[in-house]
Image 1 (tube, rainbow, N blue to C red):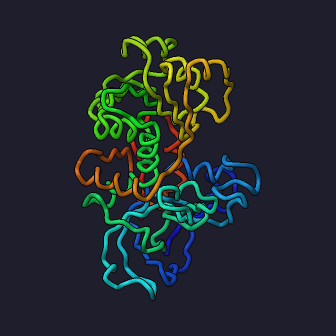
Image 2: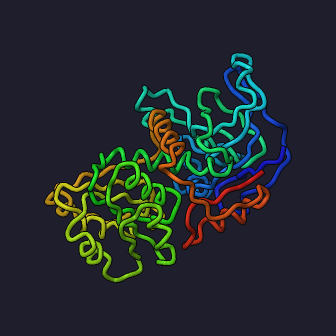
Image 3: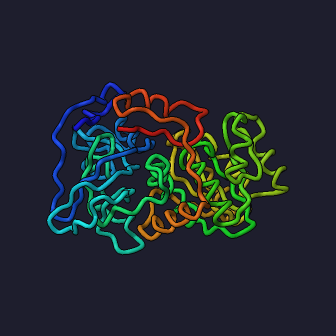
Length: 344
């Protein structure tokens, strides 16, 4: 099969196209012919070594074993099964739950042995992939491409909204609202949980699209008075902030939160380190959450909401598998709206 491997930590020149044998499913696994794989920050940061340093950068403490096929947002068709899996699974169109874990039900994402497809296992930048049968779910939409945009970003967004326990009518600020997680945060908070969303983007060209996704207000982070504008459109402080940016908007987030407000972060594309005046945190009684991925039950809840039409796929652009380098470079550009996909 054709696949794209990461050969080590570094720039996109570490991505190479190779021809390798099609993997064989183990006893409880299935072989999936991949139809689409969406790109996430996860595999770019893994390649760049952003999760740690040198040989210890990955989801597990021991680091990534190279070469590795990245990619975690995967849809495809089951074409072969391991000896303990019923042949009735052959022909199923599936979306993959993106990690294995021995964690208890409801805490799978907290287990120390959580291992991620595309980091600890070969992933979706390929024509075929093997994965445990129990972690393959029926696609929520008829389209492989549209169903591939939700796995990691959608699960992360769903878990973020769950963590802050959004209530109908609350005001939620969503940073990076034009990105994969951010655009889903907007939809989930507004259309599933009934919150009023203030979407923060770069350029306001996407304003109407963000409103279609459920944003009540759309503001640009490029203004010199973002805190003031948020407080003005909301007529006061906000209940919660769902953040994927990190340092660049951290002080603004704390500034606009009400007393007793909640801040939840799942990414740091705008800076991985920040300064924090603890006084602001404790004097305002702010609760902070770190968040990534989620539980199997949340994954099922998300797929149901997609099937019911409450959450829509947002796709910016697709690339052929062989153009993975170009796709990752494009992914890092500012101004895109939604997901970028590789198609074998």
